[in-house]
Figure: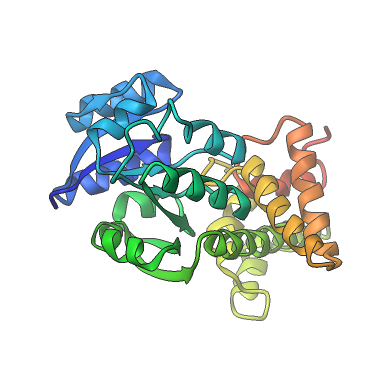
Length: 293
């Protein structure tokens, strides 16, 4: 555990990953976030530095985890005066769900300055980040994966090395696309059940014992029913990730009506001011008498 760890992006996911590694005995040396108050609060909790400059994170840490929002944010931090300044010998583990092409751009830029990158795509949520039970899909050079594998083992209950850079991002986009479609379908099923007067507790129980069962039913079914949309994975992120998958499919010449329809629903949530709700909030568009826009 000799590596010093840094985090860029310490919202609820990044912060809980940092807490987990601190609990496991790692030296979390630096955190950075555009929301400086949150970074400062976490730094006080962990006993590390809340960096004002990205290059300072690179200076203080050997392995830097990035947990940012989207492609633009990812590209903005990997610059010559940002994380890549003084980055020779450093390793960046990039956990955001971004386009495969962005990972390739970042990898090439890092290699020019003697740094290494790894995709650490996550298929879990906030509680799992804190507990160290994330499911990780990793992409990049295998030797880089092997070098940081002991750290990743402390964050995950299971992980899979997928292949070269960009491949894990493809898998993660498809994971989220299918999850989003399942979520939209569940919202419509429960919405119809509610509209025709069925007992939703009974309906969810029957769903769970038939072909309608899914992990989304377990995580979101009751929340849809009782309108508890505390955010673990936002509608805005669902729209973004479904968009990444759509672009992949369309580039391969595929017709994807379900993915397109689901993205349109999440885009509608954003347009109607519901983008910060959890993905379960899609039920607000399907249950009779709820959100009217």
